[in-house]
Image 1: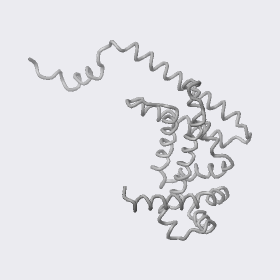
Image 2 (image 1 turned 180 degrees about the vertical axis):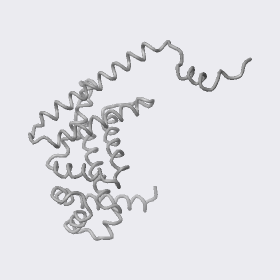
Image 3 (image 1 turned 120 degrees about the vertical axis):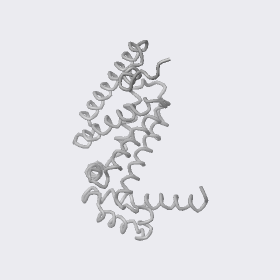
Image 4 (image 1 turned 90 degrees about the vertical axis):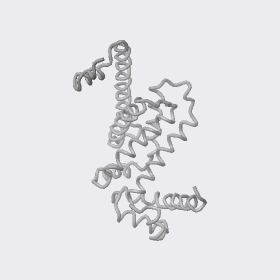
Length: 225
């Protein structure tokens, strides 16, 4: 990356950081909208040109920036934790809780963010951000899978996090007992699934390749020798 590109990227990040806090304040009342973005820009003292360069999609780019900041909070939390004493389910729980707790006082902005991500122009952004969160959590807690498990783990955790987030934001109690209990149940479901999958793989290890056999039935046995 050239020095010019590096400086441009750094300036974009700095501008987004300047916009984020006022945007969170406006989004909590008026949602993540172009109007809120403009109000945040004025509050931050950022010129229209700088804002356009940093966030060409306005509030959607800033929302994505906030999501990445929350993901970074997971990495910071893990650095200060002793994962070696935790079982895998405890590590997953720790990562999810770190992400949820990073929302802090901005729960209303987070509720409005979920609503914004349901709009058609965020149809691609929403699952990408959720996947990125799941990927961050797995990597942070030491996952090194590279096979199909890499994708299945992130797909499953995306569902766990997304549903837990909805429960978390819908609970008035600051301690979030219902959301935490919900998370524990979801993680237990995942552990049960992984256990069943492992048992099934062990049971079928010596069986013929059914996919190959079905392929032959569909396309024929191939040339005879």
